[in-house]
Length: 138
Image (cartoon, rainbow, N blue to C red; front, top):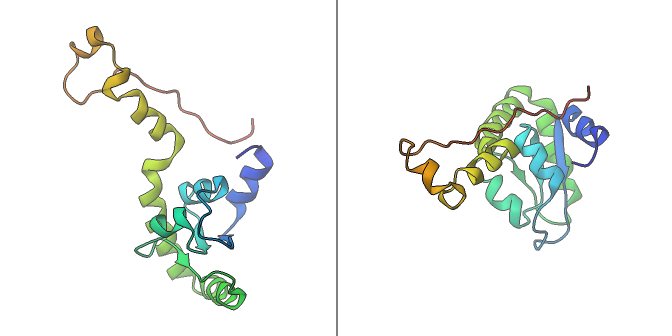
């Protein structure tokens, strides 16, 4: 996300729609942010979404099928209980992908640990801690 405005727009959405036209779309920054924020996602099955939205974590719709997009969006709008259950499922799945956890996992890889420090640590403990950050405006 590049700005507080973009972040606010994604956070305010009930449903995030990503209807790319081609499967070869590798990633989408707003899709990743929406997933981590626990948004209900409706998307075409491009490479990144096919995996992340599997098992009920989102709705995959066919490429170039506006009627399918409309049908799924209306269903989600009208069924709050189903929307909330699926949103929570996607949110919990995406917890390992939020920036602070990704950064923390990279800091704790053995190649980043100093031998002197690592030898004095219990197994599986990371000596580094990142400060807590939020995307909220001051």
